[in-house]
Length: 279
Length: 293
Image 1 (cartoon, rainbow over the protein chains, first blue to last red):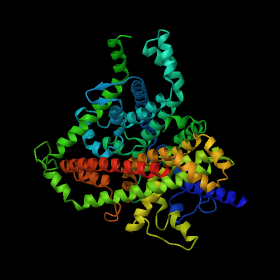
Image 2 (image 1 turned 180 degrees about the vertical axis):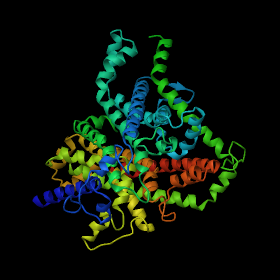
Image 3 (image 1 turned 90 degrees about the vertical axis):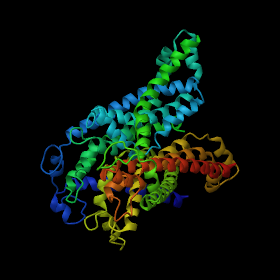
């Protein structure tokens, strides 16, 4: 069926074009100057407009941009620590929920799992005002530590959700064997279960990093100037006289690390690890 | 192992995570409920007692209910489009396609990008005279369209950005589902002489029903929070044409500083969302699983 094949590849190419369009546009705009932007939409350097490195220079203290280094570092530290803590706490909790049965009054395992996951239903705006007052009370507004606390509340549910499903798929026999050999539950978990769960933990870590890195709302409402995160710094460029070139350059540099994550996720996907982790 | 030992181990696995989450989340929730019963605003800040007055006002707040309706329309609309496109894309790169791993990575990229940062880029794309959107449509003799300044086009722009951003999420879950399917039912269908369309309707689609339900519900939950795109692209405008519930609560609470009223809006919103999600989940299970049974 050559016709069907042609249509198939055509569809793939059309969608690829749509996916890449905004990123390509950002790439070409990042080399423009005010003249290049106001002369209408052009795409090719040298032919459509005179390329310049002004946009990229402005990221590192050049004129008309933002200094991107500090917000970048803040984003890396906050997202990294919140993800790490969420993964550790979430993996432990998920292992407990998958292997033991808990019962307090009418609350059982399924209810606890639901409590964790239901946090995702909460719209950010419901939490923003109390978080603001809570951090103000703790004197943690506009600090990295304050944001890490808030991000744990966002990311821990994701870690628990993915890891409970994952551990349910890891055969119980392996930890039972280890315990028969005289391991305590901690040792069985650390020596036998954990090494067999690295791919699940990797999936959970990917999702924590994506959702942490991409949050804007809490970073926006809970910080002012000291602890600006990357998305907030970039959006602050968005005004009536936006410097499109700095904006595009900073946008590209902020999404770049996540492209690496896309490659990792695809590996997990094609190896079939994701199917076990997401159900 | 004796009972005390077991209890010790059970608690030390679960409790650290559970307590941390409770500590971070419980205060905000209880506090919001209490604030919603107060008249806290810029003039008289603090926890006075106003009873259910805020809730009575919420009940008659046209702008809020219109924003809810608009949000529901936009969320359901975009999620359905994302589902259909995501399913189609997953099927396209599922099997014998050249460079399929390359295209899989490519199709995943939008969900990895920061929504709010991409929205800023999209805003330049939709610029009426300097942006490429109208330039591209001009090739087909269409436009120019007032993307961000007319009500209908602004809604379309927000939905287009949401679809670009989140179709990959559907694609990811559905492709993971497709890749985990057993081969036998497909062989059986082939032996029966079923064509690609019949195989899809009778084998692939029913077998992916559980994944579909999960993916649709997760996306609906996340889409109900549409707000950042709106904040950057249109600020809810023109007028209130793209104002979603979350954005309206943001305006009343953090911009006009009517904290008490915003809290009442939030709680109302949360209750409506939980009820709606439960109903939708039940409906989806009936439609998708009932069909295949």
